[in-house]
Picture 1 (cartoon, one colour):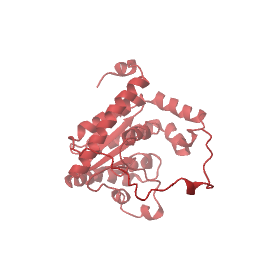
Picture 2: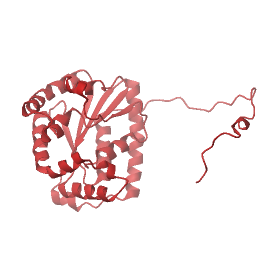
Picture 3: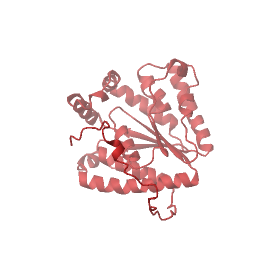
Picture 4: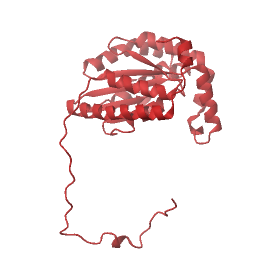
Length: 269
C-alpha cells in the first residue's frame, strides 16, 4: 500500500479512461456471471463503510450490465418489531444465495458493529457478543461452500465532508441526506473506533476484510471490480451461436391498426 503522499498525489481518473476500463471489467463480469450459473456457485459480497463512502455507486457499476436474477442486491430497511425479536442474523440469512447466484449486501449484519453500536441501538453486551460470534457464523457460511467477500469502503474525513456538502446543494441528491447521516458525520471518531474494533474481531483468514480506498470514486469502483474478478476463479463458458429465426408470415396481419385511437404517451422528445 502506498504512502498517504503517494495516494494524494494521484490525479483524478479521466472520464474517458474510466469508462474504457469500466466497460472492459463489466464484460468480464458477464463472463463471471455465466461461470457462476454454469458451476452453480453461491457468492455473498458484503459492502460496508461510512456514509458517502461510495458503496451505492460501486454496486451500480458492478450490476449495470449483468442480470438481476444472478446478481441480487439486498439493502434491508430498519428491522421491524418482529425482526427485532428474531435471532440477529436471521433476517439476513433468508436472502442468502442459491446455486448460481451472487448476493450483494448494501450494508449487512455488520450494522450491529457500526451504526447500531455507535448510535446506541444495541447494548454494549449485544455488540460484544456480535463481535465474538460473527467469525463463528461466517466460518459456517464458508464451510457450507458459499464464497464470502467483504469490502470496506474507506473515505477520508475531508472527502466525506465535500460529498455531504455537495448533497446539501444538489436537490437531486438531497434524499441521500438523513438525520442519521448527519449524526454519523458528527461522530466521525466514534465510527473510527467501531471500525477498528470490527476489523480486529472479524478479519479472519477464511473471511478477510478488503479495504478499498474510495476518495476517488472512479478508481475505487475499478479497483473493487478488479478485486472481485481476481477473487473468484472463472473461465469462459462455450455458447451456441445465436441466430434469429425467420418470423412466421402465415398468420400475418396489420398489427398496428388496432392501436389506432389508443392512449399514447406524448412524443415530446
